Image 1 (cartoon, rainbow, N blue to C red):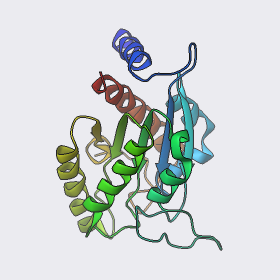
Image 2 (cartoon, one colour; image 1 turned 180 degrees about the vertical axis):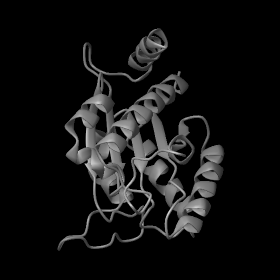
Image 3 (tube, rainbow, N blue to C red; image 1 turned 45 degrees about the horizontal axis):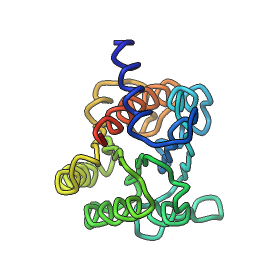
Image 4 (tube, helix red, strand yellow; image 1 turned 45 degrees about the vertical axis):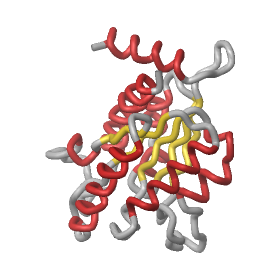
Length: 204
C-alpha cells in the first residue's frame, strides 16, 4: 500500500506542473463540515503532506447562491472564492460544499464552479459527495445524484470523492450525523489525500 501511494505521488508531481522542487498547489474550498480541519492541525498536515494546500473552509458557505450569515459575516460562495483567487487556485481544486444548499440547481452550480476553475488553469477537480444523514437527508441524496451526473458529463478531470460511502458506519460524527470531531477530521483528510492523488493521475 505504501509503495502504491509513493508511485501515485510521483505521478502527481509529473502531471501537475510546478517549479523545480516545488510541491503541487491545491485549493480546498469547503463549508462547515470540512471546516473541522481548521481546528485539527494534524488533519491539515496529513492532507497537505507533499502538497501546497490553500484551505478556504467557511461555515454557512453555499455553492453559487448567496451564502447564509454566521456570527455577523457572510462568507463568499464557492464560485466567488474560485473567481477571486484567479490563477492562485493552483493545479487542483477540492470542493466540499452543499450542506447549506438546495439540491435544486446543484448540478448547474457545480458546472459553473468547474468552468471557473478550468478558466483559472486548474487541471483536476475533486468533488466531495455529501453525507446522506440528518434532517435534510433527502436533499443530500438528490445533491449527490446531481454530483455524479455532472461529473460524468464533465469528464475524467472531475473525480467524485464518495465521502458518503466512505463514512458509512463510522461513529465520529456529531449528533447531526454530519459534522466532525478530531477523529473525523483525520479520516476526512486521509480520504481526500488519496482522491487528490488519483485525480492527479487522471490528468496525464
